[in-house]
Amino acid sequence: MPNPFQSFESRDRHQTFDEIYGEPENFLEIAVINPITHGTGSGMYTDYEIVCKTNIPAFKKKSSRVRRRYSDFDSFRKTLELEVRRVVIPKLPEKSFLTTNKFNDQFIEDRRIGLEKFLTVVAGHPLIQTGSKSLLSFVQDDRWDKRKFE
Amino acid sequence: MSLFFKTPLDIEVRLDGDDSREHVEVKNAKGRKEKLPLYKDGETVRGQVTVRIKDNKRVEHTGVKVQLLGSIEIQNDGLQSDDFLSLAHELASPGDLTHPETFQFEFRNVEKQYESYRGANVRLRYYIKVTVSRKSADVIREKELWVHQHQGAVEESAPPPPSSVKMDVGIEDCLHIEFEYSRNRYSLKDVIVGRIYFLLVRLKIKHMELSLIRRETCGAPPHQLSDSEVLIRFEIMDGAPVRGETIPIRLFLGGFDLTPTYKDVNKKFSTRTFLSLVLIDEDARRYFKQSEIILYRE
Image 1 (spheres, chains in turn brown, blue):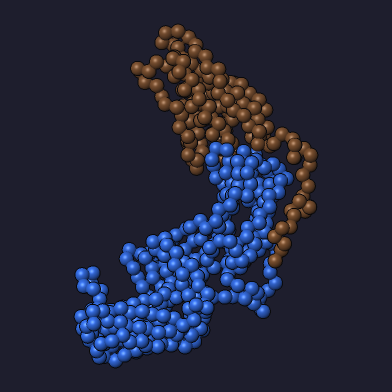
Image 2: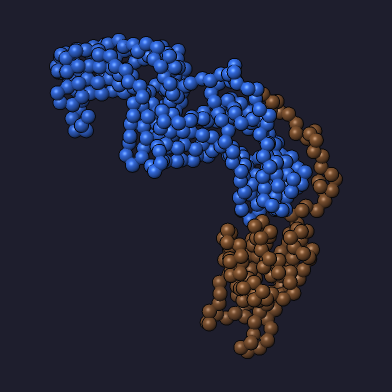
């Protein structure tokens, strides 16, 4: 019987200094911040900034900042459901109704939090990271064009 | 026995050598622990049966017999019971009982092919059953035994133990690990020694645990029943690993209530044990790898 207290350190694998103390290969930070309401009257809408910093090779840019509105998230989620069928995609924060005050601070903040949670879970999923072109486009392209994926 | 009429008799079964014999603590159906005497294959089962009459009545009977039974009970929409061992001795021919009587019994060199087992849907039990037959209702008393089977660590003709079990698992471009452990066959008192080596970590892993899972299957398709139970769960790593990291595994099996691997007992049920490695990431996603290990009782 092998010695149960044997050490595993001295085997043929050695970690380099960089492997132990360097930036880990799973570095991925996604935040949804800075909501801004644009326009006036019936054309008013709020959009949010998606900030992404990463060293995961699947993402083309190491850092990016883009702006997206709720309806962009909604069409992205629908695209993702069709693109990555094996995975259950988390829900977005609730849609607003005719009677909701969409431009009240609390509503916008709750939405921001929900969108950030959604995007963090989605972007961190290994099958979506490696299997979805729409994710990479949604997070890092200057403009989100849902028609590209229909 | 009817709930409404008290039995006129008390039957007591005593087994020889109970004081010096090793006992096993087993959990019963209600979750309580009971101590049962341990017997080996080929061992003689001998003892006494004492029959006492209540209320000084005279009790007529049509025979007293003692049986040693081994049966497999499967709980599958009702209880199915099959005896694979059935031995009997007559203790008294039809007559009257007026005072307490003690009968000796002996079942010599009884072959007990299988181990006793209590599982989720299946039970294998050995028991002494005393029956006082009467024209009205029989009076029955049972006493259960427990049986262990011992196997040598390595048979003479067996090939030398194989080199360690090594598995390369992961998700393309996201996670790549090497899972290695000493061998695929362990005694119940052994230690599982191994390691996890991380080749690629692009996920945010929060912790890693190792479990032993017992899977019991009984019956044949289409009525096959399966049950999985986690016997041990151990956290072996807390925190995020990086490329090149090695996490050791040392799992001492002796401290746990494990069942040896049973393959197709009496063609009725099997019990198998699986080593299960689970990694959990920061979004609570679980990644796992399961492989079977053979357990035997030394």
